[in-house]
Length: 258
Ligand SMILES: NC(=O)c1ccc[n+]([C@@H]2O[C@H](COP(=O)([O-])OP(=O)(O)OC[C@H]3O[C@@H](n4cnc5c(N)ncnc54)[C@H](OP(=O)(O)O)[C@@H]3O)[C@@H](O)[C@H]2O)c1
Image (tube, rainbow, N blue to C red; front, top):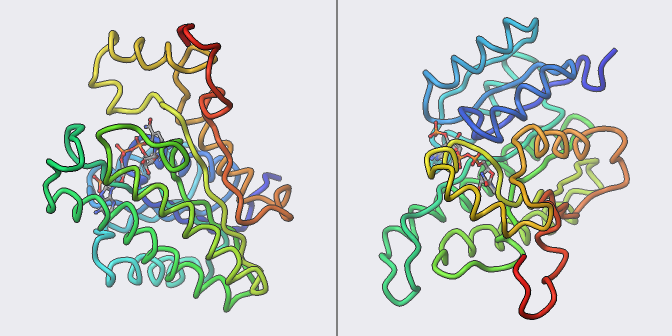
């Protein structure tokens, strides 16, 4: 018996990185998994991997900047599996190169917020409606350490992730009585495709700023998401859990390098 046997979990941003790792972890724990992102080909590869390991997965290609698509992904989950027990909202847009706020392009702001905050709201709204009408469920929003502490030059992303943590708390309060728990994760720098592309020197620079002196792995973030969605976290809602190697714990002594 695994912790999610007989349950249904939906993961947005499941085409790569943290979302893909979370989908694989749910499947390994026994859940039927609904894989959501725009890239149908990448989602099909994740599904093939899950099925090769004996799991069950459904691909739903969707653009979460569109309200209809968020409704459609949840409807597809219920059509195929009859219920929705857990959801992890990991889809996000990052914005472009770091830019001081006064020089930011308005379209870039809109593009980032449309997925990373509005898309999360649309996802939550559709997921909670189904869970609340069937006795409850658990949701994790993948925020970021930048949702709690700003990084210069990243205004749209930082604002979206701060907003997502606020949205998480409000959703938790609004739907606690419906049996729906809503929590957030605040991952620190995690070794996904973006940091892969950045090259080893960049990864080492980033890792040096983390108190444990390494990047996190997608599997480590996935493990935290599963714990928050599972029965062991039944009394946890409205919380934000840092998975960040100590990054948010504080500063090194004045004048010292990390
Ligand atoms: N990696 C890190 O260091 C780190 C640190 C802290 C927080 N996070 C957060 O963790 C989450 C996953 O990050 P990641 O680095 O693993 O992956 P990522 O490269 O940021 O990928 C984002 C995911 O969102 C999907 N997505 C983007 N726009 C979408 C849209 N309009 N509709 C539907 N899906 C969309 C992408 O798939 P498609 O392109 O196929 O649509 C992809 O699966 C994000 O929320 C990110 O902000 C990451």
